Image (cartoon, rainbow, N blue to C red):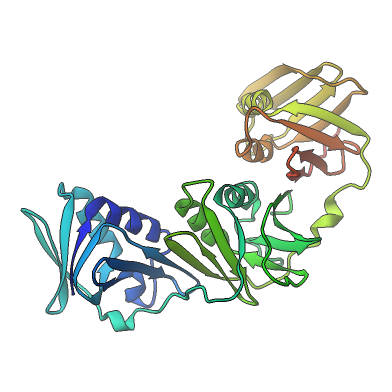
Length: 369
């Protein structure tokens, strides 16, 4: 095998693939990537941890001899970062791989490419299609709400639900719930049901979607999912487990509807968080006619009061929130848009809604007032 590659393009592919490669594995070969070369200019990078995998089509390649090589991720990325050359040569040698530039030469010990696990490819089955910007919005507005770990429910996942002709992404950690639908061109018959995607796979998808207008195709099977862009295919096994009945936490009645500008609201919530700590993390929100007042206090830190004009006319209501739960959602929204806070009372779940049907549900903190 012998090929000439564009260094920056190869480095970019390795940086994306590093999001898949495990730090530790009983199979050392998984800490590497596989490169498959086909004349005259075809090359594909493969990486997998056996649960998630990526196939990355490389550009800027001149292939002199077909073949495959396996390269360790860490060492290869360090070489690619440090070399000043625009073009480098890759060549399979006796028991290793040579990386050659104008004035540098590295010989890396490597493993048999035949031992590298395959990464599934999308077949000829009908695939659903959407814009990259739509998919990014669905991921970014939900995946942050996943639990870091949970043994009872499959909360460390994003639920993909197909209902009434459209897809929705849903995530929760039992303190908050994020729901985001997206415009998807549905292919064929989709069974009513749901699929659980791991956050690691979704984070990998966000790293390869640069153009919001690019088309993304995806298929959802019984135990796996695949996503394809122009040059990347991402494979993931689905999370096993039971997702809670999230609909039960959304109050059926609304007694207060309060409009909130995202940018200014984000700013005052961040201010209110400054004088909080683990023992006193709650901030008191007082929604009144024409004004929002936020109060926080913490022993050995002090107390604060922050005010914001409010386009609201109605009865006053006070609610206590963990400010970090609000910050997590507000920072993925457009600062120029408006959200609507819906409340039944100050003890049941609060629902923040946007005009594009995003819903973010937060459980208030209960304490004596």
